[in-house]
Image (cartoon, rainbow, N blue to C red; front, top):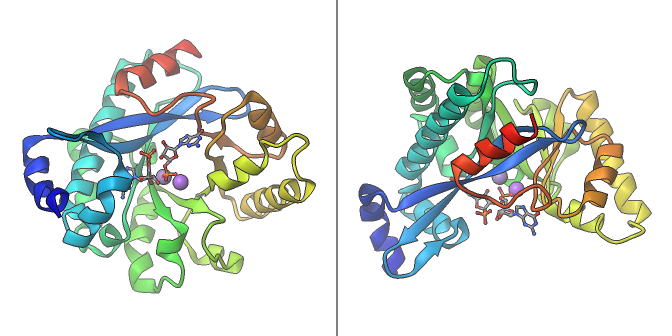
Length: 262
Ligand code: G
Ligand code: G
Ligand code: MN
Ligand code: NA
């Protein structure tokens, strides 16, 4: 495949870039941070989304250096936002969420690379959240969880991404070193109908209650309308992400959005 063979050179040539989508506190509407979403500016095909090249990068192992680049770039960006935010901003320092592929979880350098990047760029571990999909952790044994546990002990947040799509064993949640559940977009989409399906509402209500009882924060993805945001806030969700607030965009726009609501 042409794209596959072009990946390593693309990384060397700097053809990847990152867009940031705001994470908004549902209680007061303030921007608290952003999820980093990688794109490839391909010289012939234009901008390619992660769905078009992340699977190829995973198959070839390039995901490890690419993921490390995404992490470093995102941490550098969070540091830049923080440095440019006036002291005393209510919402506190902007944070950044970075997606991890299953291959990165099993790579032995994960903890040392992350520590190195945070220390070298001077970002507090608490300003970083690593997103891991629920399916990557299903049936995870202790060896797989150990690096995540180490990172969590340092203060890095771990989020369970796309929660509710995999076959999740809820009791298993207690074992995982996660501090955030990211409710999959499909739940939010169910809320789009009006009136929303009462069973959908009950399910979200139940997940939020379970999450909070385990001291996990709940982030909802795919919020497209103000009515959805209100409903999800009333159901107790903590943080939201979606087109209603902003599409993924350049880092400066995230900073403007964060300052605008301060
Ligand atoms: O918003 P977008 O279409 O860009 O995101 C599609 C998917 O790609 C998301 O589910 C997201 O988790 C994944 N993704 C985006 N950036 C990265 C990345 O840097 N690493 C990995 N592993 N996945 C990513
Ligand atoms: O990590 P994850 O796969 O969840 O990445 C988020 C994906 O969801 C990206 O592809 C992003 O562009 C997309 N997305 C973000 N906000 C919305 C939204 O409000 N509605 C829809 N349909 N997609 C969204
Ligand atoms: Mn994600
Ligand atoms: Na997701």
